Image 1 (cartoon, helix red, strand yellow):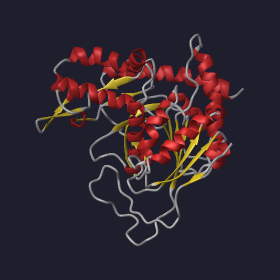
Image 2: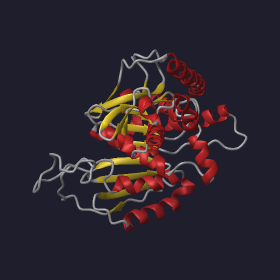
Image 3: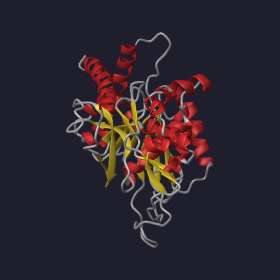
Image 4: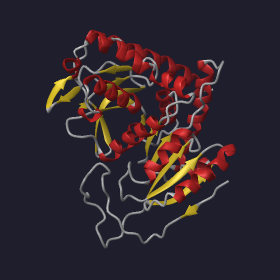
Length: 366
């Protein structure tokens, strides 16, 4: 089933503006025809994360306040009636940059000529399900989606994988799309990064935008390592090392890490549902930084290919590193000093990823 809802004429004019900027950037000037809209795919589009995400994309929080958007919404056939309701709500928002909405259950439609792919949909772990069974189910999903990226998407497409296990799902999608550069694939650890910023900010009594350069190393799982050894906190106008600002090493090496590692489970226990609003916000942050770059002197956390890193992390993994982004290209921040405590945590999460990868690749070859 394919339904296309057209809500625009192609003779529009626009300028391109970074959604974070107060001033308009150089782009399509007044009186000049703008480029075609960008095509943005969201999978699992009938789910709760997408429900929190789609409005932000469609109103310009991610790709620019004046960048026209075509949204493609992919989900499984039983969810198409739900997608119809999502489409109606998007229409009813009356968002001027949303030029077209395409709900579909067909990968050849969903992945055609896309500029950005946000792969939210995955098989959730069900009660009694072994981890191997979960990996096997998701290998099948992301093998199919990777092949669709390879066959139908633009070779410049930027892909962020959200569906868990996100790191390994991202690796499988990339391996299934050999014609698309590995550097175009990343997985979401920005939610963990944002959580860490918030925890540090609350501890210091400042707003979260006064904290920068926290790092999430490794897997988006309970082995992740939230590291604030290189983080800075702005205290009354003075930039201070996070350890000095907090003055509680036992908390930073103990409860802070365990709270971060179990935060997703804590949300599920409280809501009876997984994180949605915060996950959607993190996806927006992640993709906006890919599109417009990171701030000067700051880095963010992102799951990317580990090849050529300076931290002795095994290659052929999608591993969360500190990255800086410019011209839609990420670069791992190399050469940060790593103490023995951090080294052990980084190696432990890498070992889990190696095990996941090897299991997943066995299924991929079957």
